[in-house]
Length: 247
Image 1 (cartoon, helix red, strand yellow):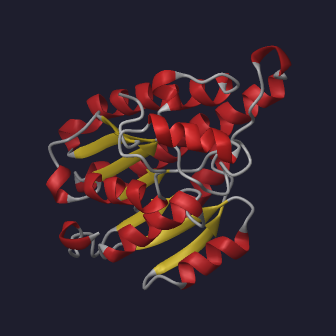
Image 2 (cartoon, rainbow, N blue to C red):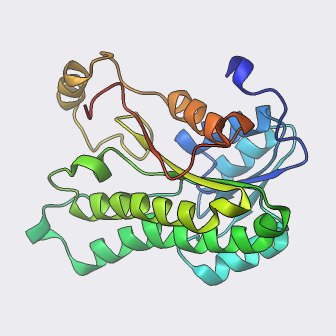
């Protein structure tokens, strides 16, 4: 992360949902490098979350299904004040619309969108408003900007995150709480592995001006910037980190 990081999050607590692996792990690492106490949230992969937390200087793993508001409230109560929130938890249930069961739709909305409502509400109420400082970053997707065949549920959830981001930014900007979204392009993680063939990934790379896949560190660098003091006058924005794929 270089000079962007410093230690400006010393004394602040950062909650990263789905923070144990993939993009979430890289984000947890970047915020820890900035001095934050990092809470690595996970739903089911306890081993990955605890390994990530153990590798960081001031971090703990915390289990909660962030699609369940009651579990979120209990988690945030246990944590105390949340100063930085990164809504990274997500899932995919790819199917063409006519093959998609209501459960496939409902599960994606719950995991990818309801979770952001529950965690953001709890984090703001935990002390961001009283402190008059907060950073919220929602991990959306370029699919939320462009749509994609076979991903109507995922696209709807990620587009919903963008509208949610802009509304929260308007509501709490006067309290010095910023809310932004990062929209990654294709990044090879456990979540995306298997959803595209190597040939399909190759075609995506050809269409990308930067001519490579994204990495988890690319996304984490953008999140780190948006959580920094340097980004204090940026709110309600969507930063596409996709090598120019969505141009």
